[in-house]
Structures are given as structure tokens and as C-alpha cells.
Length: 422
Image (cartoon, rainbow, N blue to C red):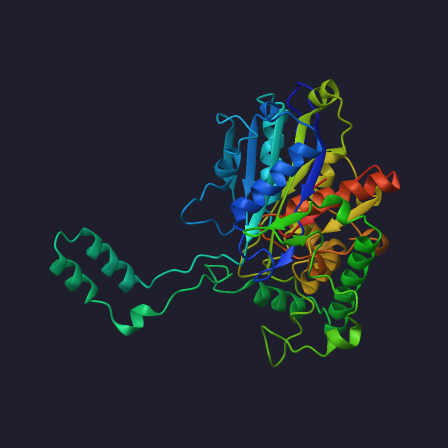
């Protein structure tokens, strides 16, 4: 954490999340705002915290509602918190919850506040569907018309092609490449084999299944009773496949490059709905309220690359900086949590950590080193658990801290493409 001369340390006191469910399944009727409200309410109740203590709420989302785009403010208006609590939304693609956490932590470190809730939520079941430009123009003209004849004349401008809806693409606007296409490019550039990707995906499912069976993963979740009838009860992630095998994964066809590709639905994270959040406090405030922190934020760093290059390779640039700021090395880390957007992306970054080329691009003379796989994503990752874009950063942070506590570890890294927190 940056030093401001006041000696304030930022503690993560607790965290919770909804189960993560595949888009279009059990959470399809719940908006991202409501998923956020569910986990924030659960966090306050689990910690027995008075809502009046919360001074800020920072929340991330990647595909906001066009009707209520400030997700944080909508969540903050719950009866559990005072109406005057400051709330703001952030978006840093798949690292949005990480940005929310570090923004809140900065405010605490500066001494502006003592207590904040930060996290994120995403409903990929409810992405906005847009009208074509022709349809939008006709509707605007019709709304402005003062007579029935004028409205009919405006709507008569609509042509059959204008009736085709526009669905938002999960792609980089500047290049037009989807995340999957970027992962496919990385696999080719870094010689990541299909076999290695499928084995990594299998590892994710097996470890996540084990973490679910023994209660380690479910301990960080809340149970959700699905509206409107509240008859469906969800208490675990529904994307984990305990019964999958390497043979099944290797039989799937490539999605993004059907002829020469290696990235499949099986070695990629699924589109997912879910929410997650953490409670942050100054060290002094946590002690005064009697909380035992899960851990402290020591440093963080963000990085980016030209999106036309290797879009998901930014951790190799961010991690060295964050470790240097903390005065630590990779060998000091008891556990490493890396977001699994794609197996190809994780494996490319693991190779990058060993690379002199990437070390020099990050401004360092030597690589951070090789990640011990026995310490990496020890309860699986997003390939199995799922990836609600705005929420995953909070999920991996809490998963890391809880497992460090179980192992009596001291330090860990939580990484996402483009971001790293220590």
C-alpha cells in the first residue's frame, strides 16, 4: 500500500459472494444490481456490522444497466445503509472489482474514511439489446411528434433491416477482437498447446470440485432464494464439472479459430452471473470494533498492453511492480490466485513470469520467476467456478485470504489480466 506518512494500514475484514451460475440458468431473473444488493446485505449481516458505520460503497460492473448505470448508488440505497453514504461505480473490464477494492483502500489509507464495502456484480443473462440506428431515430421522432399523423409518419420510416436488434459483443472495440480471439492469439505466440490447455482446465474443475465437497468454497458463499417464487434455492456454483475428463475436454472443437485453433468452450471460463464484495477498514477501526482482519493490502499495481498485441498478458507487467512496492519476491508468496479467463491466458502469463523479455518490458532486470503450481489456484479457478466480469476480482481476493488463513500463510498474490493485488 502506498505510504502517506500517517501509518494507516488497510484491512480486509470479511468477504462474501453469491454462488456463480452460468448465464441463462438459475439467476437469469436477477439483475446485477440485485445480485450486488444480495451479497452486500449478507456481508453486513454476517459481520454484525451496523450499516451506519459504512462510509463508502464502491462497486464494479462491466456491462451496466442502461436504465440504472450507477450500480453502486442503487445498492447503497438499501435500507441497511444511510441514504447519504457515498457510492460510486467503476469499470476496468474483468478487473472491475479489483479497481473497486483498491479505490476504497486508497480512501482509507488517505484517512478520508475508515469503513468501506467494495466489490462487483454482473448479470450476463441480462445484457442490453440495442435497436438499430434507423429504429432509434424513428422512435425519437415519433416521441417528439405532436399529432398521431406525425407519429405514424415517423414510424413509417422503419425498414425491415431496422428491426434486427444489435447484441453487444464482448470484444475490444479498438481491434474488434473478442477475448477468446485474443487468447487464441496468445496460445499461438507463446506455443501453448491444446493438450496443456485441456489439462489445466481439468485441474481447475477437479480442484474446484474438491473445494466445494469439503466446504472451503461454499464457506465464502451465501444461499440465494431465487425470486419471484423463492422456491429455487442456490447454494453452490453450477459450472463445476466433477465428472469431466481429459478425454471429454479434448474432444471439444475450437471456437475462435475452427481450423487451427486450440481454445474451446471447455478450456475457457463460461459466461456467468454473480456478485461478490468485501468489507474494508482501517486497522485501527477494525481493532476498535473487535474484528480480526483476514489480511492487509500491502501493495497493488495495474498495467496494460496495446490491445492489438497480447491483450491478456498484462499481469507479467503488473506483478513485478507490485512485488517491488511491497519489498517481496514471488518466492515469498505462500499462495497465488490468478483469474482463469482462458487456460491459454494463464499458461501464457506463467511463461511470461519466467521471461527476461517481459521482465525488461516491465522495467526490471530479472524475471519474477516460476510459479509453483502447487500454490496456484489451489481450489480451481474461473474456468470451473465461473466469471461474472465485475465480481471475479472480489471472489479471488476472498478465496486467497481464506485459504491463507487455513494454511497459516503470510503472503499471497491475487491477479487478473491487467491487474495484481498483493
